[in-house]
Length: 542
Ligand code: DQQ
Image 1 (cartoon, rainbow, N blue to C red):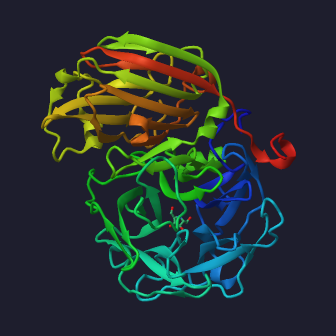
Image 2 (tube, helix red, strand yellow):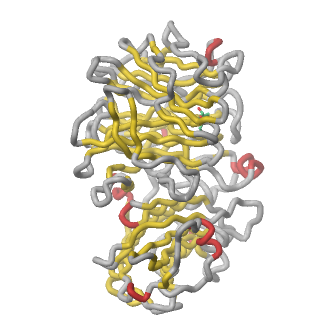
Image 3 (cartoon, helix red, strand yellow):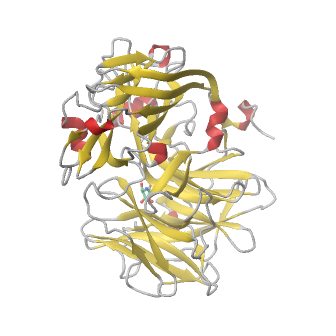
């Protein structure tokens, strides 16, 4: 292992070694944030014997690794301990429900409770004597019934959870109810949420969002000042989709504003890599926080050579976009800004058509950048009928130069630009409105072959007043998380440059359109390394 492996991240959460996938049971309990995660302790690849890794933090940025919280031990989870969620019960005690892969490879739901509530880190977890508490019935296939959500508490005093499932080719989120959290009933064989021809639904999430403001609310809140969000992950597409709508608790129904279409019209948390995500309500700061797994884009052999695979996104605060009322906004939690050090800024600089400007003086492999672009000649945007156009394909096929854009950032770029990841925008005029296209183009991210270099893209609305587009990118060696339009469109990618590593990485602002644009404000920061490790090696502890 090289001394400073170029692709390991410096401020994104990773276990010390080996495989990691889904974030599990994130919660805040008595001053401590907990993150559990799907982990293969014995290899850098997925396999049997998956456990719940466990780390704790006071700020969601610096993390202390602990022993595994849940490991296979009983007939009902002997093959693996798969994903699940934490719920804080009415008496304030936390409980975890997770999926066990049992000795028949059936998927069953189990409970685990902290052994000692006076341990501030809740290091040890005990499995309930009545496990498994839910087993698959006719509503799901025995090997496609998993990932219980955080529970919410209804006005009738009953707890509810949803579980991801598949029946035929229908993806399902199935609702169960319980008075005591141990005995669970399927009150209605009709799924709470279902989509045809999608295959299995994984890691469903269901939560309220305030209709006003950025604060989050507890999962059990039902009132006229909230709407609800249902999130489902489809393994077949490897994407997390969300639906905003109305929760009719009396009828135990969720009416989504829009139906799943299987096209680029569907709303996703992230149009790049971001899967098996899970949200939780942070009581300390009254916000809802979202974690997502960002998997590797290199080969399994590369992962074995590296000795690790998988990172978690920077936790994102999530709220309802009050402007549109039907989309979410995501923004890196404010704590990440504690890592900002040296700063470079550019104010009011014109970027002529076909120009490029280096943002020098920062560690471009470990940085946080915020830019506000102004588009003085918005009305010159090219007219283009976007109906039926797939934005991801447009990102890879549109001519390299347009009228307004592409402009944006070249991240993790080599000095000679042979390597770079372009995060860019173009603006089109379509039926009397302006539509933006956001792209993250990985096609030239590395001279290495054998990597997944898919280009990502999505559309968004551009306001003619003010005529600006904002972009924030978190760059951390092999991950770039980009937030367009204040977090209305997000895109994460994994890249493995050969040349643009460490101090050889550069950052540029570019404009390949024919019209000039303005960098009305740009701030770039070097990011310090987060402390993520075992307590004996750290200064980060109480
Ligand atoms: N990962 C877990 C499953 C879940 C899937 C297994 C989603 O519980 O459905 O590691 O990535």
